[in-house]
Image (cartoon, rainbow, N blue to C red; front, side, top):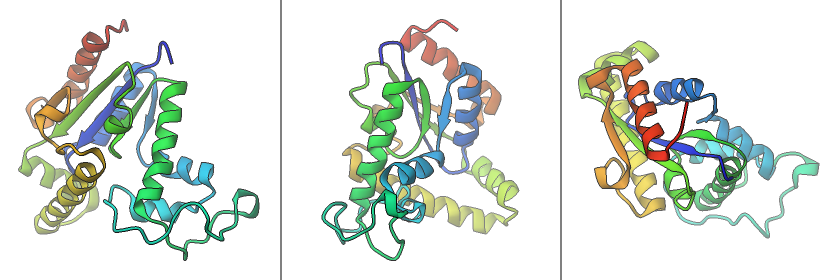
Length: 211
């Protein structure tokens, strides 16, 4: 792990956080993980990915099953059937193990999924939260999903609620609060490309990197 570093990105829906993370990782020449974590967690646990998709960035709904001691087939017998229920807490643990393993092996950019909390003991990390103006968020979602402004606003409200509940539940911190991160930035102020460059400069100074 000696030379590895990680950048953990929290983001508001419609802020361009994923695009910023992807472009930042490309500029730095390191791996990027967002939805890819679902596939990796599925492969390494032997659980079908629908488990992780349904629980993705959702707080625990109560323990309705445990990961161990259940009569499920293991990897050698194929993925666990999706009709069986696992708690979101158990799935969070599986995904957390994947995140820690990746961070130990190489430098990465992680988006969401409490990666900053999961990697809180990592010696070289930069935790960033990306926000944007409501108008810009709505416009981005309308363009991406071909929906009207009312539908986009509803998506934003639901996503903000879900992500904050998830993050606050697992991290015991406050999603989007400045004190939770090393850097909070409004992508509306600089635009996507300049926000990427700004974060790159910040990370280089914080982690004393030479690009």
